Length: 400
Image (cartoon, rainbow, N blue to C red; front, side, top):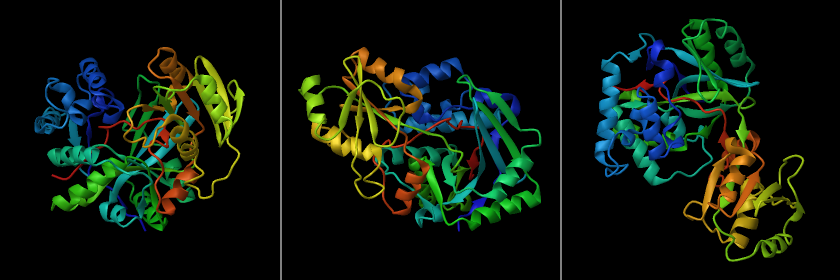
Protein backbone atom coordinates (compact mmCIF):
# COMPACT_ATOMS: atom_id res chain seq x y z
CA UNK A 1 0.00 0.00 0.00
CA UNK A 2 2.22 2.85 -1.22
CA UNK A 3 2.08 6.30 0.32
CA UNK A 4 1.77 9.10 -2.23
CA UNK A 5 1.37 12.51 -0.61
CA UNK A 6 0.94 16.15 -1.70
CA UNK A 7 3.60 18.63 -0.67
CA UNK A 8 4.50 22.32 -0.44
CA UNK A 9 6.56 22.65 -3.61
CA UNK A 10 9.44 25.03 -3.95
CA UNK A 11 9.26 25.99 -7.61
CA UNK A 12 10.35 28.72 -10.01
CA UNK A 13 8.34 31.83 -10.70
CA UNK A 14 6.69 31.02 -14.06
CA UNK A 15 8.72 33.68 -15.86
CA UNK A 16 11.92 31.79 -14.93
CA UNK A 17 10.69 28.21 -15.41
CA UNK A 18 12.25 27.49 -18.79
CA UNK A 19 15.53 29.28 -18.09
CA UNK A 20 15.91 27.74 -14.63
CA UNK A 21 15.01 24.12 -15.38
CA UNK A 22 17.68 21.71 -16.54
CA UNK A 23 18.22 18.19 -17.73
CA UNK A 24 19.41 15.91 -14.88
CA UNK A 25 22.93 16.36 -13.48
CA UNK A 26 24.12 12.95 -14.69
CA UNK A 27 23.36 13.75 -18.34
CA UNK A 28 26.39 16.11 -18.38
CA UNK A 29 30.07 15.60 -17.75
CA UNK A 30 31.91 18.47 -16.11
CA UNK A 31 33.04 20.12 -19.34
CA UNK A 32 29.57 19.87 -20.88
CA UNK A 33 28.01 21.22 -17.70
CA UNK A 34 30.37 24.20 -17.65
CA UNK A 35 29.36 25.11 -21.20
CA UNK A 36 25.69 24.68 -20.31
CA UNK A 37 25.74 27.14 -17.39
CA UNK A 38 27.73 29.67 -19.42
CA UNK A 39 25.08 29.46 -22.11
CA UNK A 40 22.16 29.43 -19.64
CA UNK A 41 23.35 31.29 -16.52
CA UNK A 42 20.12 30.70 -14.55
CA UNK A 43 20.25 26.96 -15.15
CA UNK A 44 19.42 24.71 -12.20
CA UNK A 45 22.56 22.79 -13.15
CA UNK A 46 24.49 25.41 -11.11
CA UNK A 47 22.80 23.84 -8.07
CA UNK A 48 22.50 20.24 -9.23
CA UNK A 49 26.12 19.92 -10.39
CA UNK A 50 27.83 22.83 -8.67
CA UNK A 51 31.36 21.71 -9.57
CA UNK A 52 30.75 23.17 -13.04
CA UNK A 53 30.94 26.64 -11.48
CA UNK A 54 34.26 25.95 -9.71
CA UNK A 55 37.85 25.70 -11.00
CA UNK A 56 38.88 22.35 -12.44
CA UNK A 57 41.46 21.71 -9.71
CA UNK A 58 38.62 21.30 -7.20
CA UNK A 59 37.51 17.65 -7.12
CA UNK A 60 33.92 16.80 -8.01
CA UNK A 61 33.28 15.62 -4.46
CA UNK A 62 35.18 18.28 -2.56
CA UNK A 63 33.18 19.79 0.31
CA UNK A 64 33.33 23.14 -1.49
CA UNK A 65 31.14 21.70 -4.26
CA UNK A 66 28.25 21.10 -1.87
CA UNK A 67 28.81 24.46 -0.16
CA UNK A 68 28.63 26.09 -3.58
CA UNK A 69 25.39 24.24 -4.38
CA UNK A 70 23.85 25.51 -1.13
CA UNK A 71 24.94 29.08 -1.93
CA UNK A 72 23.40 28.96 -5.41
CA UNK A 73 20.22 27.46 -3.94
CA UNK A 74 19.95 30.16 -1.29
CA UNK A 75 20.58 32.84 -3.92
CA UNK A 76 17.75 31.51 -6.12
CA UNK A 77 15.36 31.72 -3.17
CA UNK A 78 16.50 35.19 -2.08
CA UNK A 79 16.23 36.55 -5.62
CA UNK A 80 12.66 35.31 -5.90
CA UNK A 81 13.49 32.86 -8.67
CA UNK A 82 12.18 30.09 -6.41
CA UNK A 83 8.93 30.47 -4.48
CA UNK A 84 7.16 28.16 -2.04
CA UNK A 85 3.56 27.13 -2.72
CA UNK A 86 1.33 28.13 0.17
CA UNK A 87 -0.83 24.98 0.03
CA UNK A 88 0.03 21.31 -0.21
CA UNK A 89 -0.64 20.13 -3.73
CA UNK A 90 -0.18 17.35 -6.21
CA UNK A 91 1.04 18.17 -9.70
CA UNK A 92 0.81 16.62 -13.14
CA UNK A 93 3.89 16.59 -15.35
CA UNK A 94 3.19 16.11 -19.06
CA UNK A 95 5.95 15.41 -21.55
CA UNK A 96 5.30 15.61 -25.28
CA UNK A 97 7.84 14.37 -27.81
CA UNK A 98 6.39 14.51 -31.29
CA UNK A 99 3.43 12.13 -31.29
CA UNK A 100 4.32 10.61 -27.91
CA UNK A 101 2.71 12.06 -24.76
CA UNK A 102 2.98 10.84 -21.19
CA UNK A 103 1.51 12.40 -18.05
CA UNK A 104 2.72 11.58 -14.56
CA UNK A 105 1.66 12.41 -11.01
CA UNK A 106 4.14 14.42 -8.93
CA UNK A 107 4.06 13.91 -5.19
CA UNK A 108 6.10 12.55 -2.31
CA UNK A 109 6.62 8.88 -1.58
CA UNK A 110 7.79 7.32 1.65
CA UNK A 111 11.34 6.28 2.51
CA UNK A 112 9.76 3.55 4.66
CA UNK A 113 8.00 2.17 1.57
CA UNK A 114 11.30 2.15 -0.29
CA UNK A 115 13.12 0.44 2.59
CA UNK A 116 10.38 -2.21 2.88
CA UNK A 117 10.29 -2.99 -0.85
CA UNK A 118 6.85 -1.52 -1.51
CA UNK A 119 8.70 0.76 -3.92
CA UNK A 120 10.59 -1.81 -5.90
CA UNK A 121 14.01 -1.45 -7.49
CA UNK A 122 15.80 -3.35 -10.20
CA UNK A 123 19.33 -1.95 -10.19
CA UNK A 124 22.40 -1.99 -7.97
CA UNK A 125 23.71 1.38 -6.84
CA UNK A 126 27.30 2.54 -6.55
CA UNK A 127 28.49 3.81 -3.15
CA UNK A 128 30.36 6.79 -4.64
CA UNK A 129 27.25 8.03 -6.46
CA UNK A 130 25.15 7.44 -3.34
CA UNK A 131 27.53 9.54 -1.23
CA UNK A 132 27.45 12.36 -3.75
CA UNK A 133 23.65 12.61 -3.70
CA UNK A 134 23.48 12.21 0.09
CA UNK A 135 25.83 15.16 0.54
CA UNK A 136 23.93 17.17 -2.05
CA UNK A 137 20.53 16.56 -0.42
CA UNK A 138 21.90 17.29 3.05
CA UNK A 139 23.53 20.51 1.90
CA UNK A 140 20.29 21.82 0.44
CA UNK A 141 17.87 20.15 2.89
CA UNK A 142 15.79 19.41 -0.19
CA UNK A 143 15.09 16.71 -2.76
CA UNK A 144 15.60 18.37 -6.10
CA UNK A 145 15.67 15.53 -8.63
CA UNK A 146 12.41 13.57 -8.97
CA UNK A 147 12.56 9.77 -8.99
CA UNK A 148 10.90 8.34 -12.10
CA UNK A 149 8.36 5.71 -11.02
CA UNK A 150 5.96 3.45 -12.86
CA UNK A 151 2.57 2.22 -11.67
CA UNK A 152 0.20 -0.27 -13.24
CA UNK A 153 -2.52 1.31 -15.43
CA UNK A 154 -5.35 2.79 -13.35
CA UNK A 155 -8.63 4.04 -14.84
CA UNK A 156 -9.39 6.33 -11.89
CA UNK A 157 -6.00 8.01 -12.10
CA UNK A 158 -6.47 8.39 -15.85
CA UNK A 159 -9.80 10.11 -15.15
CA UNK A 160 -8.08 12.59 -12.84
CA UNK A 161 -5.53 13.35 -15.55
CA UNK A 162 -8.28 13.97 -18.10
CA UNK A 163 -10.17 16.31 -15.77
CA UNK A 164 -7.21 18.22 -14.37
CA UNK A 165 -5.47 18.90 -17.68
CA UNK A 166 -8.47 20.96 -18.81
CA UNK A 167 -7.22 23.81 -16.63
CA UNK A 168 -4.48 26.31 -17.47
CA UNK A 169 -1.02 24.96 -16.72
CA UNK A 170 1.50 26.41 -14.28
CA UNK A 171 4.26 26.02 -16.84
CA UNK A 172 4.32 25.16 -20.51
CA UNK A 173 7.38 25.47 -22.70
CA UNK A 174 9.28 23.63 -25.39
CA UNK A 175 12.93 23.03 -24.56
CA UNK A 176 15.74 23.26 -27.09
CA UNK A 177 15.63 19.52 -27.71
CA UNK A 178 12.02 19.82 -28.91
CA UNK A 179 10.41 18.27 -25.82
CA UNK A 180 7.36 20.12 -24.53
CA UNK A 181 7.09 20.31 -20.72
CA UNK A 182 3.72 21.11 -19.13
CA UNK A 183 2.96 21.15 -15.40
CA UNK A 184 -0.46 21.44 -13.79
CA UNK A 185 -1.21 22.09 -10.13
CA UNK A 186 -3.91 20.00 -8.43
CA UNK A 187 -5.62 21.50 -5.38
CA UNK A 188 -9.18 20.22 -5.88
CA UNK A 189 -10.02 18.28 -2.73
CA UNK A 190 -11.90 15.44 -4.43
CA UNK A 191 -9.13 14.95 -6.99
CA UNK A 192 -6.48 14.95 -4.27
CA UNK A 193 -8.36 12.35 -2.23
CA UNK A 194 -8.72 10.17 -5.32
CA UNK A 195 -5.01 10.37 -6.07
CA UNK A 196 -3.96 9.40 -2.56
CA UNK A 197 -6.50 6.58 -2.25
CA UNK A 198 -5.84 5.15 -5.71
CA UNK A 199 -2.10 4.97 -5.21
CA UNK A 200 -2.77 3.22 -1.89
CA UNK A 201 -4.71 0.53 -3.81
CA UNK A 202 -1.59 -0.49 -5.73
CA UNK A 203 0.58 -3.22 -4.26
CA UNK A 204 3.82 -1.67 -5.48
CA UNK A 205 5.41 1.21 -7.33
CA UNK A 206 8.48 0.59 -9.45
CA UNK A 207 11.60 2.71 -9.84
CA UNK A 208 12.15 3.25 -13.53
CA UNK A 209 15.03 5.71 -13.18
CA UNK A 210 16.68 7.34 -10.17
CA UNK A 211 17.96 4.47 -8.02
CA UNK A 212 20.85 6.52 -6.62
CA UNK A 213 18.57 9.41 -5.66
CA UNK A 214 16.14 7.01 -3.95
CA UNK A 215 18.91 5.30 -1.98
CA UNK A 216 20.35 8.70 -1.04
CA UNK A 217 16.92 9.78 0.25
CA UNK A 218 16.80 6.68 2.42
CA UNK A 219 20.21 7.43 3.90
CA UNK A 220 19.38 11.10 4.47
CA UNK A 221 16.20 10.13 6.33
CA UNK A 222 18.27 8.12 8.79
CA UNK A 223 20.54 11.12 9.36
CA UNK A 224 17.92 13.86 9.52
CA UNK A 225 15.28 14.17 12.27
CA UNK A 226 12.99 16.42 10.20
CA UNK A 227 9.72 14.58 9.51
CA UNK A 228 9.64 15.64 5.84
CA UNK A 229 13.05 14.03 5.28
CA UNK A 230 11.16 10.73 5.43
CA UNK A 231 9.47 11.62 2.14
CA UNK A 232 11.10 12.11 -1.23
CA UNK A 233 10.08 13.58 -4.57
CA UNK A 234 8.73 11.32 -7.31
CA UNK A 235 6.86 11.39 -10.61
CA UNK A 236 4.81 8.26 -11.28
CA UNK A 237 3.64 7.37 -14.79
CA UNK A 238 1.33 4.61 -15.89
CA UNK A 239 3.56 1.82 -17.18
CA UNK A 240 1.78 1.79 -20.54
CA UNK A 241 2.87 5.38 -21.20
CA UNK A 242 6.59 5.16 -20.52
CA UNK A 243 8.88 5.00 -23.52
CA UNK A 244 11.97 2.79 -23.14
CA UNK A 245 14.68 2.80 -25.78
CA UNK A 246 17.59 0.42 -26.13
CA UNK A 247 20.71 1.06 -24.07
CA UNK A 248 23.54 0.24 -26.46
CA UNK A 249 27.15 -0.86 -25.92
CA UNK A 250 30.44 0.08 -27.56
CA UNK A 251 33.82 -1.59 -26.96
CA UNK A 252 37.16 0.01 -27.71
CA UNK A 253 38.95 -3.05 -29.18
CA UNK A 254 38.31 -6.56 -30.52
CA UNK A 255 40.30 -8.29 -27.77
CA UNK A 256 43.22 -9.09 -30.07
CA UNK A 257 41.23 -10.78 -32.85
CA UNK A 258 40.37 -9.85 -36.41
CA UNK A 259 36.84 -9.10 -37.58
CA UNK A 260 36.73 -12.41 -39.49
CA UNK A 261 37.86 -14.32 -36.41
CA UNK A 262 35.23 -12.60 -34.28
CA UNK A 263 32.45 -13.34 -36.77
CA UNK A 264 33.46 -17.00 -37.00
CA UNK A 265 33.46 -17.37 -33.22
CA UNK A 266 30.13 -15.57 -32.87
CA UNK A 267 28.50 -18.00 -35.30
CA UNK A 268 28.82 -20.73 -32.66
CA UNK A 269 26.21 -18.96 -30.51
CA UNK A 270 24.32 -16.63 -32.88
CA UNK A 271 22.87 -16.76 -36.37
CA UNK A 272 25.01 -14.13 -38.08
CA UNK A 273 23.89 -12.35 -41.26
CA UNK A 274 25.34 -9.31 -43.01
CA UNK A 275 23.50 -6.01 -42.85
CA UNK A 276 21.10 -4.33 -40.47
CA UNK A 277 17.83 -6.04 -39.66
CA UNK A 278 14.56 -4.82 -41.15
CA UNK A 279 13.16 -4.66 -37.60
CA UNK A 280 14.48 -4.92 -34.07
CA UNK A 281 13.05 -7.58 -31.79
CA UNK A 282 13.85 -9.46 -28.61
CA UNK A 283 17.01 -11.61 -28.85
CA UNK A 284 18.16 -9.75 -31.97
CA UNK A 285 21.38 -7.74 -31.80
CA UNK A 286 22.96 -5.55 -34.45
CA UNK A 287 26.74 -5.18 -34.51
CA UNK A 288 28.70 -2.46 -36.29
CA UNK A 289 32.40 -3.00 -37.02
CA UNK A 290 34.72 -1.79 -39.79
CA UNK A 291 31.90 0.26 -41.38
CA UNK A 292 29.62 -2.75 -41.74
CA UNK A 293 26.50 -3.89 -39.87
CA UNK A 294 25.77 -7.49 -38.95
CA UNK A 295 22.61 -8.96 -37.44
CA UNK A 296 23.03 -11.51 -34.64
CA UNK A 297 19.98 -13.60 -33.74
CA UNK A 298 19.95 -15.63 -30.53
CA UNK A 299 17.45 -18.49 -30.54
CA UNK A 300 17.69 -20.03 -27.07
CA UNK A 301 15.49 -19.34 -24.06
CA UNK A 302 17.65 -19.08 -20.95
CA UNK A 303 14.98 -19.55 -18.31
CA UNK A 304 14.25 -16.74 -15.86
CA UNK A 305 13.14 -13.27 -16.96
CA UNK A 306 16.43 -11.81 -15.73
CA UNK A 307 18.58 -14.36 -17.59
CA UNK A 308 16.51 -13.92 -20.74
CA UNK A 309 16.97 -10.13 -20.92
CA UNK A 310 18.76 -9.04 -24.07
CA UNK A 311 21.29 -7.07 -22.03
CA UNK A 312 22.06 -10.24 -20.03
CA UNK A 313 22.39 -12.38 -23.16
CA UNK A 314 24.73 -9.90 -24.80
CA UNK A 315 26.87 -9.76 -21.67
CA UNK A 316 27.01 -13.49 -20.94
CA UNK A 317 27.04 -14.89 -24.46
CA UNK A 318 29.17 -12.30 -26.28
CA UNK A 319 30.87 -9.55 -24.31
CA UNK A 320 32.45 -11.84 -21.70
CA UNK A 321 33.45 -14.89 -23.79
CA UNK A 322 34.43 -13.13 -27.02
CA UNK A 323 35.51 -9.62 -25.98
CA UNK A 324 36.78 -10.22 -22.44
CA UNK A 325 34.39 -7.82 -20.69
CA UNK A 326 34.01 -9.57 -17.32
CA UNK A 327 32.43 -6.75 -15.31
CA UNK A 328 30.76 -3.95 -17.30
CA UNK A 329 30.59 -1.79 -14.15
CA UNK A 330 34.36 -1.56 -13.83
CA UNK A 331 35.86 -2.38 -17.25
CA UNK A 332 37.10 0.82 -18.90
CA UNK A 333 36.98 -0.79 -22.36
CA UNK A 334 33.18 -0.66 -22.54
CA UNK A 335 30.90 2.36 -22.72
CA UNK A 336 27.12 2.70 -22.80
CA UNK A 337 25.20 4.77 -25.34
CA UNK A 338 21.62 5.91 -24.73
CA UNK A 339 19.03 4.98 -27.30
CA UNK A 340 18.39 8.59 -28.21
CA UNK A 341 21.69 8.62 -30.17
CA UNK A 342 20.47 5.85 -32.49
CA UNK A 343 22.38 4.08 -35.22
CA UNK A 344 24.14 7.25 -36.37
CA UNK A 345 25.63 7.83 -32.94
CA UNK A 346 27.01 4.29 -32.79
CA UNK A 347 28.46 4.52 -36.30
CA UNK A 348 30.15 7.81 -35.45
CA UNK A 349 31.93 6.36 -32.41
CA UNK A 350 33.30 3.46 -34.45
CA UNK A 351 34.08 5.38 -37.66
CA UNK A 352 36.05 8.07 -35.84
CA UNK A 353 38.20 5.39 -34.20
CA UNK A 354 37.09 6.02 -30.63
CA UNK A 355 35.58 2.54 -30.43
CA UNK A 356 36.11 -0.66 -32.41
CA UNK A 357 32.68 -2.27 -32.28
CA UNK A 358 29.13 -1.21 -31.39
CA UNK A 359 26.05 -3.21 -30.42
CA UNK A 360 22.51 -1.96 -30.97
CA UNK A 361 19.97 -3.55 -28.60
CA UNK A 362 16.22 -3.98 -28.64
CA UNK A 363 14.63 -2.12 -25.70
CA UNK A 364 13.94 -3.85 -22.40
CA UNK A 365 10.19 -3.78 -21.75
CA UNK A 366 8.37 -2.39 -18.70
CA UNK A 367 6.91 -5.87 -18.19
CA UNK A 368 10.41 -7.31 -17.95
CA UNK A 369 11.53 -4.52 -15.59
CA UNK A 370 8.58 -5.12 -13.27
CA UNK A 371 9.00 -8.90 -13.36
CA UNK A 372 12.66 -8.64 -12.38
CA UNK A 373 11.79 -6.20 -9.59
CA UNK A 374 8.94 -8.42 -8.34
CA UNK A 375 11.36 -11.35 -8.17
CA UNK A 376 13.67 -9.29 -5.95
CA UNK A 377 16.41 -9.43 -8.56
CA UNK A 378 18.45 -6.77 -10.34
CA UNK A 379 19.07 -6.21 -14.02
CA UNK A 380 22.52 -5.74 -15.55
CA UNK A 381 23.81 -2.15 -15.49
CA UNK A 382 22.44 0.26 -18.07
CA UNK A 383 19.49 -1.92 -19.08
CA UNK A 384 16.96 0.85 -19.74
CA UNK A 385 17.06 4.28 -21.36
CA UNK A 386 13.94 6.37 -20.87
CA UNK A 387 12.93 9.17 -23.22
CA UNK A 388 11.90 11.92 -22.92
CA UNK A 389 13.78 13.10 -19.84
CA UNK A 390 12.21 14.96 -16.92
CA UNK A 391 13.63 18.43 -16.18
CA UNK A 392 15.08 19.10 -12.76
CA UNK A 393 14.33 22.29 -10.83
CA UNK A 394 10.67 22.69 -11.78
CA UNK A 395 9.37 21.12 -8.56
CA UNK A 396 11.50 20.77 -5.42
CA UNK A 397 10.67 19.12 -2.09
CA UNK A 398 12.29 21.11 0.75
CA UNK A 399 12.50 19.86 4.34
CA UNK A 400 13.88 22.94 6.08
